[in-house]
Image (cartoon, rainbow, N blue to C red):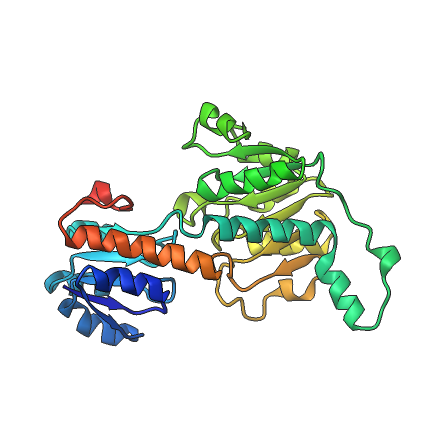
Length: 317
């Protein structure tokens, strides 16, 4: 069958598809071209650049499209409801980038706690700012997780290595299951904000999580606390975060994701107590290979008439 890949993919993933006997085409089509061409293919495999919006899915449904694969975790760039309406499974790779994103999260935690980014900046200016760069140990501190799925659990595992206490908010995971991963469950986001020294988000951006960390929630944080987001933009109210950082209401923040990407002319650029990276959480060699190959395996299963392991719109089919 014919598989179209429209975003750069690990070669290992391409080989998984080819070894299954599929005809694989790589073409970074623009939106209009994709709508015109998608019906010729049995499968579409994408990362985050391509937007499988309603028009794309419906055009594919009129043709041969049988499955959409997202080589990653989030599927906010795929219209899963329209795909479900047309009985097109949307598969992903929820475990592919687990270690990569969790490690970046912890990289940000360490950077914040020891002022690494600011120390580097001052050194390159020829300054010796040692006296102003007193940091904090992680040992004995509390890490609050908003979302305790695969990445949240892996982040908790890393935190335990540093002697941290971990608490978590996740309405979909039981107290007993969290306890297995050494996470103490709390029932409200507000409790995470109030009790934590470091707060890390590990949730999708959906209507229920839009600005889940807003002005009210940020006001509950300790003045010494830090906020980290390597999950999805739109889950934090960036205007409220900027005001809190500028006015010293919280100690600092680190963001890998933004409400608008790239975040052109963001006022956050003005601040020294925020660390920013360009959505690189899953961008490791190993993470891309894992995400691509897992997604390719799921596409192969659907095209072979088998039930995929990871289907985000299963209930809609």
